[in-house]
Amino acid sequence: MSIFNKKDKPADALTSFEKEFIHKQKVNPAVKAGSIVLYATVIIAVCACILMAVLDKAGVAPSPLPDKDKTADKAHTVDVSSHPESLQKLYAENFETADFVASYFDEKDKVREVNLKKYKRTKDVPLFIQWDKQWGYLQYGEDIAGVNGDGPMCLAMAGFYLTGDEAFSPDKLLAFSEENGFYKKGKGTLSSLMKEGAVQLGLNSTELEVTAENIGAALGEGKVVICYTEKGKLSSSAHYVVIRELTDGKAYINDPTSIVNSEKQWLYEDIAPFIKNAWAISK
Image 1 (cartoon, one colour):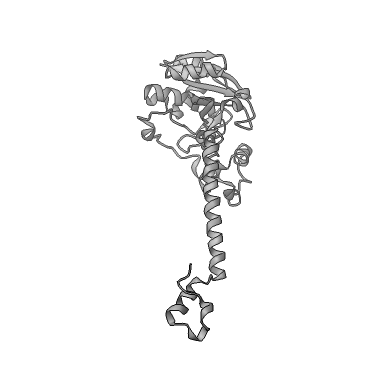
Image 2 (cartoon, helix red, strand yellow):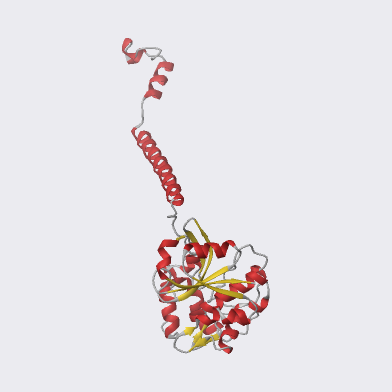
């Protein structure tokens, strides 16, 4: 209740204190509108946080965004018209490769020393990206590793993780695969690289029946699971990936063609139909 009633006095009879009190009780329309917008913004933000938490718990978390220079924005600044057709296709299908493709003519003939220091002493299977400039421009079969080196990359991930031996560096696995007949013209890396090839390198390899139970059990034993996947959910073409974790139907993979895919949480049931072969690799 007000401490006084302004109706009791004419305006010119009000004291300065009473006039100030009345003024403060009046609501400025602009201030009121601003307050409404602020309250609405806060409510929307809270609702968004709640929704994100629910989606994450349900395993439907959004994909992490790639770095800005790897997105479609880069597509408008890179001219690949003079590049080999396979690189044009690589770039069109995966904007993450923008810098690798754009640098092709400047970098392809450079001799590089491979440095695996950052991959050592990691608790997770390292992610070797086939279009890493350290080895991506190396010739592999009819093309370069940045285009078709996914098979050797996956076996390199497994071997290096299990042994820590730089004999499993990607550049050496690319050479090993081709020199020992595990690459076939027109077909790419043969699945025998994951069986006979792994054994030749001193590893154990067991082909698995492709089920979540079998893959989960192998991972639980500390093995690395390499899969051959068909064109579809993971890629526009068949290729090899590593499944590094499978828990409660949620899978994390190391995709040698994509950092984005490798950071994403997948529902196993979504990728399972595209997995055609799987091998458990161990020491």
